[in-house]
Amino acid sequence: MKNCWWIVFATVICCNAQENNSSPVLHAFTIIRAGTLIDGKSDVARHNQVIILRGNRIESISDATAAKVPDGAVVMDLSHATVLPGLIDAHTHIFLQGEEPAQGGYDVNILKYPLALRAARATVSVRRALEQGFTTLRDLETEGAGYGDVGIKAAIEGGYIPGPRLFISTRAISTTGGYPLEGYAPELDMPTGAQLIDGPVEARKAAREQLSHGADWIKVYMTHRSWVGKNGELVSQPTLTVEELKAIVDETHGWGKKVACHAYGGIGLHRALDGGCDSIEHGLDLDDAAIAQMLKQGTWYCPTLSAYYHDWAPADTPEGERDRKRAAVHEVSFPKALHAGVKIVFGTDIGGIPWSEPIAQEFPHMVDLGMSPMDAIKSATSRAAEMLDMQGQIGVVAPGAYADIIGVMEDPVRDIKSLQNVQFVMKDGKIFRNEIK
Ligand SMILES: [Zn+2]
Image 1 (cartoon, helix red, strand yellow):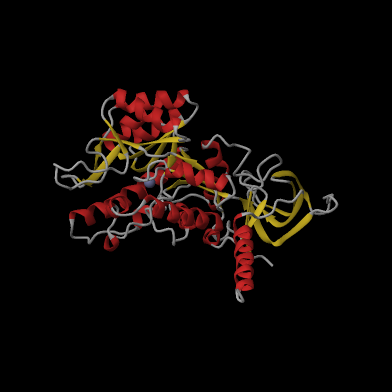
Image 2 (tube, rainbow, N blue to C red; image 1 turned 60 degrees about the horizontal axis):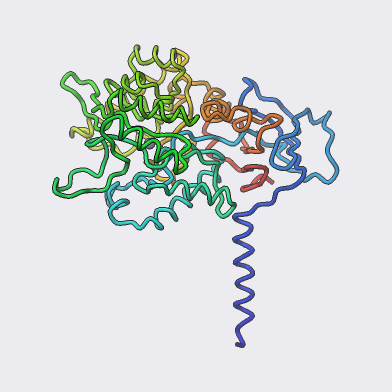
C-alpha cells in the first residue's frame, strides 16, 4: 500500500497526456496573424493578414492594420510564417504500410495480421498525415481490412484519436482475376484485398453493400496487371466491363456519391470513361482520346506520381522493365493532361509508400513535370475540395470555411519542398501541432 501514490500519480500523468493528445481545445475566438497567406484559391499570396476564427469556422480575414480583434481572443502569432489551408491528399491507404517484400509484402497483411493490429497501425497512419498538415484524406480502400476505415473515421470524429477528415471507400471492387491474393493453389479459396464481382447484378449489389455500410466514395479497379508489350508499350489487363461499371456508377450517383477508378491505360481506361467514372486514379498512359473524353465529361485526374518511383525491380527483369515504363509514360501523360486543362488533384497512394516518408513528396514531382507551385498547392486544397463536393468548406482560407489551417516557415511558392516541413497544424479550429515560436 505504501507505493500506492505512485500508481495514482502515474495514472494522472498518463490520462492527462492522453487527453492532451487526442482532445486539443477549441476556443470561442482565435486570431491567427499570418505573415504571408496563401488562401488555396487566389493566384497570389497576401501579406500581413489577420484571420479571425469563431470556434471551428473562419469568420473573417483582413489586413493587420484594419483588423478588429475580439476581446479575450487567443492569438497565434504566425507573422513570420506562411499560412495555408490544411492540405488534402486525395489518394491514400491508411491500412497499408509500404509492404516491404522482405517483411512478407502485401499478402502478410491479410494472411497473418489480426484486424486489431491493422487498425492500430492505421491509427498511426492518420496521425502522421495530420502532423504533416494533411487535414483531409480521401482513403481509397482498406486492402482486405473490410470496413475498418468506417471505424477509424468514427474514432477521429468522436475525438478518440487525432486524424484528418476522412472520405472513405471501404472494400473497393474488382473482378475475378482482378486483385490479390493471387498465386496460391487453385483449390484454395483465398481472401482478396477487394470485393470481387462478375456481372452487373453483383456489381450493383457490391456498391449497395459498401454504400450502406458508410462508403463516401466507391473505388473500382478498372485495370490490374501491367507489363511491357511486344512493341515496347505499356499493356494493362482490363477488369470490369462497361456494363458492370455502369451499374456501379448508376447506383453510386443515385446515393449522391462518386466513383474513383484505378486505371493505367488502354481498354480499362476507356471502359472507365465510357462507364462514367468521376476520377481516374494513376492514369499512367493517357492517350489523346482519353484526355478529350476527360475534358468533355469533367473527369478528375489523380496522378499519384510518387508511387511509381518506388521499389523498382532490377532493370533486366520483366518487372523492372515494366516499372521503368510506367514512370516513363506517366512523365508524358501528366504534362499532356496539364496543358489540355484536365482537372488535376493531388494524391500520393501513400500506404503503398511507407507512412514514414513525407506525403508532400508529391509536390516536387508535379512541379518538375510542369505544374506551377501555386497550381500544385491548389490541387491539394481548393481543387481537391471541389472534387470532394466540399468547395468553400475545406481547402481554402476564407470566411465560412472550417478552420483547417497550416503554417510553414519558408515560402512554398519559391520552394515547394518546404511543404515537407509543416510546423503548425490546426484542424476544425483545434491546434494539433505548433512548433512556430
Ligand atoms: Zn491506391
